[in-house]
Amino acid sequence: MGIPCPFVYAEGKPCTGEIERIEVYQADIKWSRTPDGTWELDWYPRSHYHLFCSQKGSHSGWAKSDDPRMKFHWNELPEEVRAVIDACSEPVAVEPDGK
Image 1 (cartoon, rainbow, N blue to C red):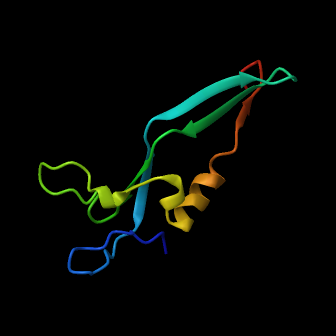
Image 2: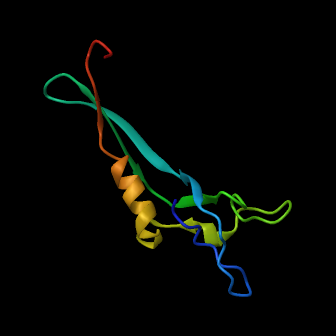
C-alpha cells in the first residue's frame, strides 16, 4: 500500500487515493566540487511542496489553481512523505570523467 492522500473533503470524508507525485517549489540546486575532485549535487527547498493524488491529482476544481490543502511546508508534510524525500535526498557524487 502506498502513502494515503492527506486530503479531507469539506464534509469530513478523507480521500481514498494515494500520493503518486511530490513536487518541490522554489528549490536551490547546486553542484560543488569536493576535495577528492568529484562533483556533488545538492538541493534545498526554499518554499513548499505540492502533493498529487492518484485519484484527483492536485484536488483542484475545474479551471482552478491547486488546492491549498495539498501544499505543505517541510514541517507540515506527512511523516511518510518526509521519509520518501529524505531517502532520495542524499548528495550525488559524479567522478570527473563523468562516470
